[in-house]
Picture 1: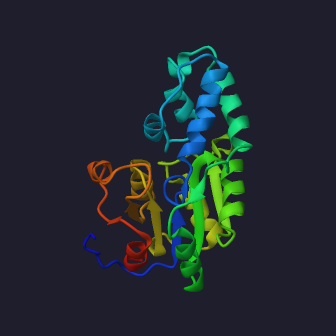
Picture 2: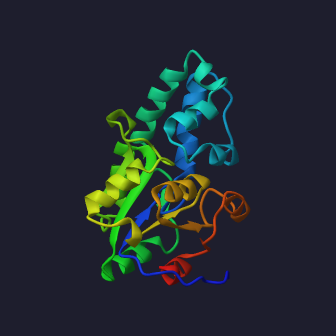
Length: 222
């Protein structure tokens, strides 16, 4: 167990979704490979898809499709992925161990809770409604509305405003380098969890300063 650092008290906790609250990797891989098969492209391993995720669906398909955005079928692949994934989000997806208890405890203790994800907005909202009804606010990718995706601060700032919170009372919890940079760009503290889509070494290489191996450590840090 890592040494637990004492941190100031927060009243708001904003979570990443994929790799932090939900293990979505199998469903992401299945959706990617559905598109790859449809267009006759090579399929990808679970480990490869793990490295593709975190920067939104456009980046995911850019990584998965041969020649990425230069591929003449890129936009069609992207559209087919969105359609397929949004109707197959819960085939293999499940919360990580202890996450349900963590959310219940935070709500009991009076924390304001939200989810901010680079996943498409419809999928983010449907997954949170299905799995985390105790979290009242969830926001997915909304760049079509002028709200830049993570690691830009826009989505988190919109969420803080929606919750009626203040940056100095917020903590962001995520599992990737994108989340670390998002918190930095927003000017809020960050806890990086080691159970998600990035290894501890990858997190540390990308500037993680406060890490948690399990939900008990998250609670202690908060």
